[in-house]
Image 1 (cartoon, helix red, strand yellow):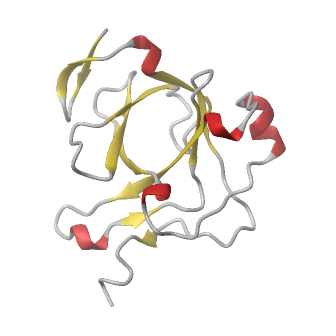
Image 2: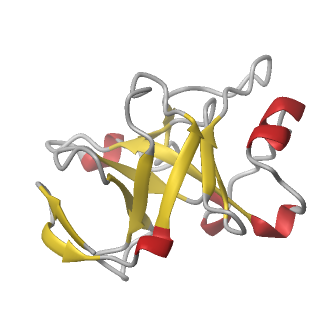
Length: 145
């Protein structure tokens, strides 16, 4: 299918790559269809592009690619709603905020990760209440010291 996006122009995507956010992204409850785009293979960042709103794309990152000590406990209700059968089928990504004028000040939302079930294309954002994780953790904490 052809997908028109503000950031990437018109692109061709397979409908099988569309995730249904059965647990919506906070503040975007009206949008449920997203696709993960990787326009540049030379970067750790990917983009979560809305299929329903051409102007909305979140930069996302998988912390498994970084040397971060980040473990999460997925709440039982999320396991049920996302129909999770095994953890090997999960992709965990985090939304980042990248200031255009100062990319070294990039932050990662550790408090509310995105969970993707690859088996059934269900996805959702969960809030890790009581985890102590930050909503805007500095990605380059050591560099900025």
